[in-house]
Length: 174
Image (cartoon, rainbow, N blue to C red; front, side, top):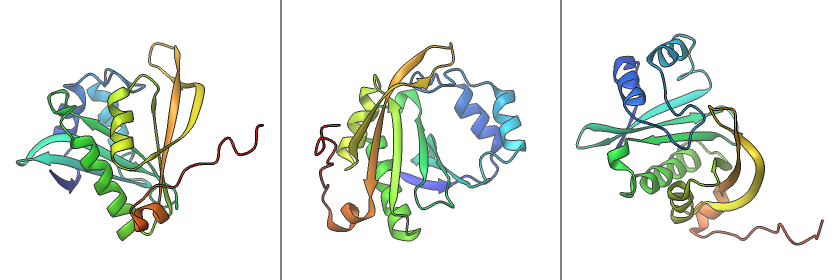
C-alpha cells in the first residue's frame, strides 16, 4: 500500500466519499455538495493533512489527520468497502505512527471509533494502539441516535521501544 498527500483532487474525493456507505461514521451517506463545501472552506487543509491510501495506484482509502499543529493529533480513516478486512487499516495506522512520531515529533495519537466497529477495533489493537477508554453515549449518529465510543491511543515512547505499556485505569478505584 502507498500513501500519497491529497493535492486538491476534489472530484476524486467526492467520488470516493459518495460511492461508499460509512456505517460507523456520523455521516454515513456523504453528499457531494457537503464534500465540495467543506473543501471550499479549507476543511481538508486547515490544521489538517489529507492522504490517499493507494493500492496499485488505485485510491482505496482516505486518511485525514486533524489537529496536525497540535502535539496530540486525531485522525479519520475511510476504506473503500471492497478493501475492508484486508489489512489496509493496520498498515495505515502503522504508517500514521511512523509519520507522526518519526517525522513530525508528535507525542501521542488518539483515535475514536464506535463500540460496534469491531473491524476498526481489531485494527487499532494489531497496530499497537491501546484501548484507553469507554465513552458512554459519546458518538452522535446521523439519525440522531447516540452510540458508545471507544478511545484508543498510541504514544511515542511505546513506538520507540516497540512495545505497549499498560494503562493504569483501575489503579485507583474511583
